[in-house]
Structures are given as C-alpha cells and as structure tokens.
Image 1 (cartoon, one colour):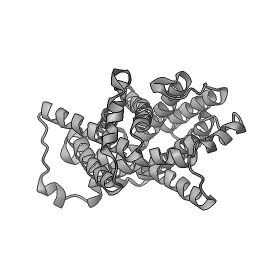
Image 2 (cartoon, helix red, strand yellow; image 1 turned 90 degrees about the horizontal axis):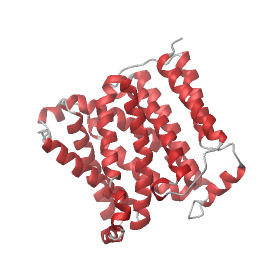
Image 3 (cartoon, helix red, strand yellow; image 1 turned 180 degrees about the vertical axis):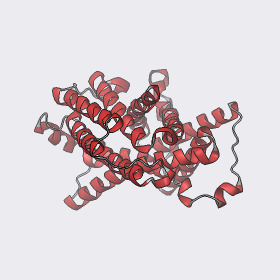
Image 4 (tube, one colour; image 1 turned 45 degrees about the vertical axis):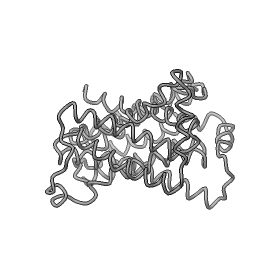
Length: 319
C-alpha cells in the first residue's frame, strides 16, 4: 500500500514542474529554451547522482544488439511531450492542454497493460477496470471545472495568443492527445530500460541524455537566443525555484523506471494522474509558484473524489 503513494507524489511533482517551467518560460521568452534548460538541469542532477552512487555511465554493446530499438525512445518522447505542453498552452489554452493529454495517457496506459506492450507487466482489461476508467474520465472532466460555467471555456479560448483556424485547432487537439500517449509510452519504455540496465538511475540518465540532445538540436535549428537565460538569472533569490523543474522531472522519470516493473504502467499513470490533478488544484487555489489564482470549486472537489474512486476501483476491485 505504501508503494502506491509514490506515484501520487510523482504526479504532484509533475504539477509543480509545470508551474515552475511556465514561470521560467516567462523569463526566457522561449518554450524550447525553457524545456531544454529543464532537461539539462535534470541531466546534471542525474550525472551527479550516478557518480555519487557509483553507477556506470556507459552502455554495453550487447544492450544495443540484444534489445529492441524502441528502448531508446523514452527521452525523445519525454522531450516532445514537455515542449509540446508549453507550446499547446499558447495555441489551445490551459483547459484543453490539461484535459487532452490526460485522456491520451489514460487510453495508452490501458492499451499497454492490456497487451503487455514495451515489456510491461500484462494486466488484462476487466469490467471493473472499464467502470473505473469511466469514473476516472468523468472525474477528470469535473475536476477541471468544465461544468462550472461557460465563461471558463470562453476565458480558456483567450489564452491562445495567436488566432488559429478550425483545421489547425483540430490538429493541435490531436497532438495534445498524442503528447499524452507519448508520456504513457515514455513511462513504460523507461521502466523496461531500468530493468535492462539493472538500475533506474542509469535508465533515467540515459533517457535524459537523449532528451537533452534532441532539445539542443531543436534550439539550434530555430536559432534560439541562449542569452535570454540571463533574464532568468537576474531574477535572483526571489525566484530561485525556477531552476528546479529539471530536477523534479528527473525524479519523476527515476521513480517511473523503478515502479513500472513492480506495479505496471497503468497503475503508475493513473495514480500519478490523481496526484497531478490534486496538487494542480492546490497550486491554482493558493497561487503557488507565482501562478494565477483559480479558486477550487464544488465541481473540482467532486471531480477529484470521483477520480479517486475510479483509481480505487481500477486497483482493488475485480469482477
């Protein structure tokens, strides 16, 4: 039972990371630069952790020759999902940027567990899981306050900084769902990578090494002004926490690599989802990490309760 609290804490940390990286982006004026720096900080943290724990930084040639090619995609998928969320926030607004990836995560995690994809422990779909997933989806909708007022939807549309056509909107929405699916796949891939390398720390280090390389290429391709980081540095001690987003992400991947082989991708994703939504509500309600305040409504409270009930049904009920 205690093991199940770790994914919840992971989800809470993910909500914290989103707020932190959003604030960093406001200083650097670049989604790619803020994501790239976040990955770099995570990489440095894992490098020091690897050296401190005497972990190997090298990979045996047999690992490359005796394992599938998808084993190395976790870092790439993580980079796409993290950067994509920042970009999507500007295009389709905060509400859809939260809802659609969550839907993608839920659907993909169920598929992975159903068929045992990416060497994940197989967990066949049951009637109880279908009921639980229905409750989870209903909880997600309610906890995001969609039913509170139509004004929330209109306000969400104003978050988009650039006008987009209907066709473009659909493409962004599809990408948001795909980004969520990539996050679930990243969790499964890194879990198996940790098993292959016999070290969650080594797996996380490899994953972030690939992610840092991918984001460096992207930043160079779009001619990012790396000097914009000075603007963030000038914020001083008051905003010291804008630099810890990468470390939070590293701990998330590290724990995922450890937990997936033990309790399965679906359980990790679902429990982390609950922690993410619950802590996101607290961040918005109290305006933590200099984020805009949004009072917790009755709909959000009911949604979190329904979501938690769904998690319990998926995890503990069988019929």
